[in-house]
Length: 248
Image (tube, rainbow, N blue to C red; front, top):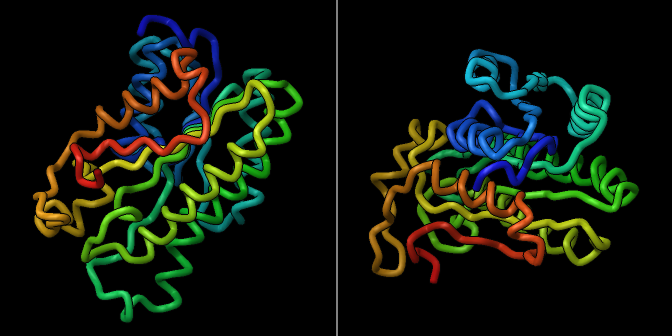
């Protein structure tokens, strides 16, 4: 892909996660300057340390859980633009999975926790960044959802519902986007990622007669890199499933 993202500034939420970290690496390799955001901790620190050690430009923005979605979003956009003088794209990975429990046992506390991390944060980021993109007549937003919102699965009820909201919001934002702004989403299948390891999702699902195949985070990151690049200039309002046919 070369340097198709040369000097562009890309904000990645959930950058300490498996997929977020891989996406940051691939975008940096394509020339982007990375703004990595996630909860404070070693995962975020390691993402940025690995990038800078490899000679890439990256900064970390810890997002405390105590901060409201609106305050977090405003801080991310403001910090990124003040530091680099611009912001060209946002890749959202942040999310909290629920548990391998039946829908009727998913209580209000768990539901609120999952939707706050996943849906509320995305909504806040969209509200904060879209005016900025509109003003500069340029901007890319790529939201990472899940095929769980498309296919039946005996797991992560609240998470799947929240990610369904992610894809719906993606299409609505794309419909209102002005020239130069592109908004798309990726729905990964069963991925080898730290967010699902505690739930053992890889061992649980069969959908539509097809055994769910565990994929690697690199394939999701490559898709995000494509959608962020000029090669995807004509792609807007699209939900890209990377799941080896789980949902076809």
